[in-house]
Length: 357
Image (cartoon, rainbow, N blue to C red; front, side, top):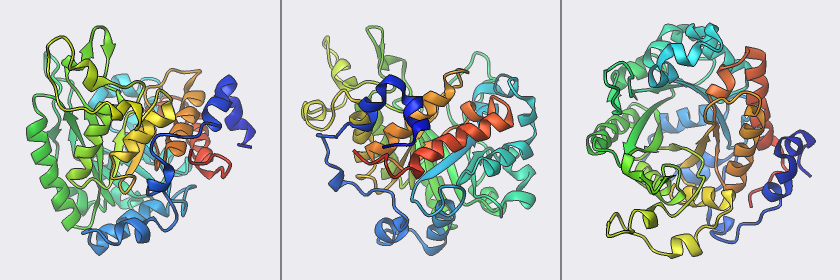
């Protein structure tokens, strides 16, 4: 039986999440996280030795060291959501050093943040925890606000501050996605050539994805295809929002409209309505788990943060994912509470009784 703290966080849905058995894509088809992930999955790839070494440094850091799973603290919200709005709940995180301290004390495998944040403390901390430098952002100061990811620096700059990996966001489905795909594909190629791993924030963004009052931005089929595009440009790890529904393609192909391609087996055989099965479809689109899927923790809602974070971790792990990347739920509270939340997430991946469905 899973750790009682995990069961308590899941509440009356504990059995729903912990006892579910996936009858869609069988786990035997997946490349599951393991201590020898580099040897089993990446050794046959085109990744060079320095890239494999940096990937391994991420896998060998923090409380999840040598498990194949990862827990990452991302703090790029100072740009993406504005610094004031992000750090008002706990102003100590205006200081980059406290961001890195939270990741270290919280037992994370890596810390992901902006050029400025990580450069400010790189000499003191780049050797203590792997850095993931986020190379592009959507800035919210242009009026009116627009939604476009633009490059904020160079890959060489990330390399020079000792980064183990670079991260980037693409808004798949947006008017700017074509340019973003080309930019980030080139950036990832350069990162790999310099020996850095690559992490893609694989988001979809288009007002047309809201149909008849339903928001399909977290639909398993649409996010799954975004994942597939992400691994195509050689992302080593995919960051994706947890799916909450399905049939986005179906909804966008009703009423005389035509969008993309679909096969009904996507919904009848490759997924179901269960959250673990929806997430399993996301994993499948990451080359059956060859590239690790990490789901995002989402916004902080206060009292429900711990339960939501643990639930997301259980879904991700049981679906065959590689871990969680949780920021606002951790840094928008006291450091001690943030550390406790990060370690509660990690406890899910350390619990051998929480198995892959």
